[in-house]
Length: 475
Image (cartoon, rainbow, N blue to C red; front, side):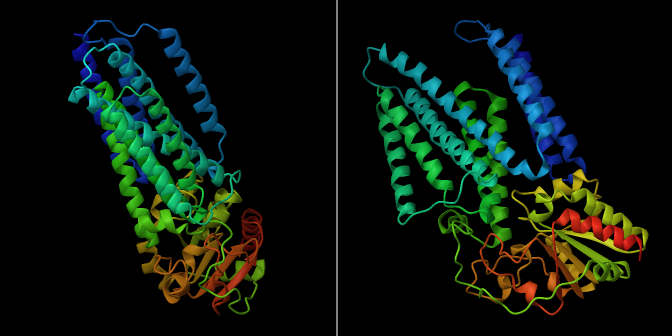
C-alpha cells in the first residue's frame, strides 16, 4: 500500500514540476509556478520520508532526527538568504545554490560508490555483471558533472560578487582538455574495474580542478551563459541520482532542469550571436581586456543637464527606458518606476526595452523591475523594442553598455560584432546615464556615446533618477 501511495506522490511531484516550469515562461504566472513546483517537491519529500520501503529488506527510513535536523537547518538558511539578498546579488545567489545542487549530486555518487565497492569486495566472482558496470558508469557520470557544476558555480559566485578575478594563462584551454581527458579516462578504467576506490577520488579531484579552470577565464559578459550551462549540468547530475535510486520524481526533475538549462544556454548564445564553443574558449569579456575592435576614442561626447533632460522627457510623446546592470547596482528600480508614473501622469507613453543578456543572469532585469511593480505589459523584449525605437522621442539608457553598442553591427573587428543589440540609435534623442565613460565588460568604447543624437548624463543611477523626478514635477 505504501508503495502505491509513494508512486502517487512522485506522480504529483512530476506533474507539478512540469506545470511550474510552464508557468515560469510567463512573468505574470512565474511566482505561482514556483509555488506549485515547491508544493510538489514538498509532497515528494514527505512521501519518501514516511512511505519509502526497501524492496529487499522491507524497512523504511528510521533516522528521522538527522533527516528533519537537516531539513530544518536548510529551511532556515534558505529563508534567511532569500529574505536578505538584494536583487543586485541575486545572480551570485543563484550560482551559489546551483553549486550546492552539484555538490549534493557528487556526494550521492561518493556514498553510492562506497556502498557498491563494499558489496563487490565481498563478491568472490571476479567478473563484474553488466548491471554493476552500468551502475558504476552512472555514478562516475554524476560525480564528474556534479563536481564540475559545484566548482564552476563557486567560481562564478566569486566572480559575480567580486571576490574572484578573471584569470587565464597561455595554454589554459589545452590544460583544461588534458584534465578533462584524464578524468574521463580514469572513469573508463573505474567502470571496467570498480575495485579501485582511490581512482574514484582521483576523478573527483580532477573534476573539481577542471570546474575551476573551466570558469576562471570566462568574463562577466558571458556569465549569463555560464550560469545557465552550469544549471543544466546540475540537472543532469541530479538525473543520474534518480537513476541510481530508481526515483522517478528525482529523475524527472533532473531531466527538466537539464533540458531547460541547455535550451536557455542555446538561447543566450543566440542572443549574443556567439557559439557555445566561442563562449567557453573565447573568454569574451575576461581578464584585462584589450579589445582589438573599436578605437579607444571615437570623438567628443556631449553632456546634458538634469533640467534639459527633464524638459525633453516631459514634452515627449513616447519614452523608452533601457535598464542595464548600472540600474541594478544603484538599486534604482523603484525610483525608475516612480519616474515612469510621473511621466505617465503627464501623458507620456513609457515602455522598457529588455535585452536578453542585460544584467548578470537570464531574466535579471525582468525580476528587478517586477520587484518595483512595473507592469509586465510595459516590458518589451528586444525584437518588440527594436520595432518601436524609430517612433520613440527619447530613450533613457540606465547603465547599459554593450547591449546598445552600434559596433555590434558596424565594426567587423569588434569582439561583439554580430551580437544582436537594442537599436536605440533609431530614436530621435538618446540620453545615457553612466557613472563614467568607462567601457563595459567587452572592454571597448561604445560608439553610441559619441553619436550626434546622444547626450551623457553622468552620476549614480538612483540619485540621477531621484533628481530627474523632482525636475519633471516642476516642469
